[in-house]
Image (cartoon, rainbow, N blue to C red; front, top):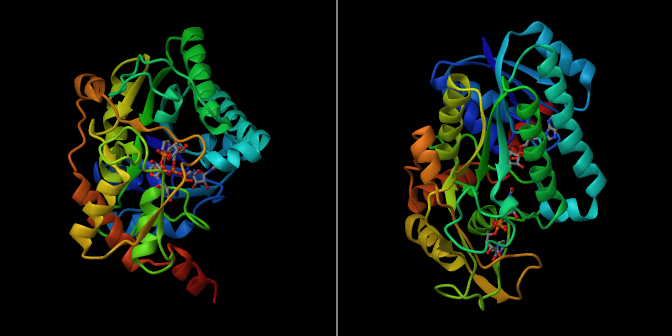
Length: 344
Ligand code: NAD
Ligand code: WQD
């Protein structure tokens, strides 16, 4: 019996593959490599000393996806595969709706055909939109503010409808807050293509000399120092949350949503200060205007995940910074160096 990991060569997927393999699970990975490199999976094998099957398959290709289920005995699916860039989703909404929603529909149909009804799904704190209050609990109002967020919200509803139609479906919806940091080996990590949209990869690329300075998007928010506050969570803690959710969907048939965050917010300047402290690198920055669509403060109430999944985030902001830096400093071009070497 194997766990199918869609999007398994991506940032969170690769970290989860490591945790699954270390916990003794057999895994099968499906990814179309749109936003990742097969090099990450080679390194997952290197870190764990374990082998697994990889299929370069697009979820939109139902025929090829069907074969993955035909040739493997899949017990449950951890579904990471999706497009995730907010700005891109505003410019290319049809692509986002098609890839994320149709991809999930096809996956669910194939799962149904093979009687596989257990899923852990990657949702996002973005489904809370502009929160009315913090910390945010799972029963807070849901309101996405961009096409990417709406794909997550719609998929959550589709999964709830599926469970309502057949209570044997067992689904954990995980709403991630802001994942940063990398595996402690420094061998796998976040490798955004082009200029990073997110704060932490931007900071690490400034530190490594790829980018000149950080632009801090606004210092006039009602926060500790005027800069935006977020709930940063270490990728390894997040990955471990998936194993707890997997235990849950195997033990019980239900559909439920869980926040995965630490419950503590840090401002942009607090994150910069923590990074500078543990790495000894200075991060030059300038203050610029607010980024459109940004909110002031967002952090989780993670009590439900602790109560019902037995999961709590264990790593602190300094671990996130040091591990993120270990990855970036050893791999200034992400996975590109090795990919180029392999192509020669
Ligand atoms: P990622 O881009 O690194 O990984 C996603 C993977 O899915 C990539 O390897 C990509 O090639 C693959 N993929 C995309 N569409 C596919 C398709 N149609 N068929 C097959 N493979 C496909 O992103 P990540 O940061 O690892 O995020 C994983 C999941 O978690 C995503 O669903 C994302 O929306 C969600 N999420 C991420 C964050 C974050 O900040 N990283 C926060 C909340 C939620
Ligand atoms: C964090 C803070 C910025 C970059 C996004 C998505 C969300 C989720 C996680 C997937 C904010 C500030 C950032 C920079 C800055 N992804 N910032 N300079 O916006 O909370 O969430 O990623 O589901 O859907 O919207 O994360 O890392 O972009 O920003 O000052 O160059 O850093 O304004 O306050 P965000 P982020």
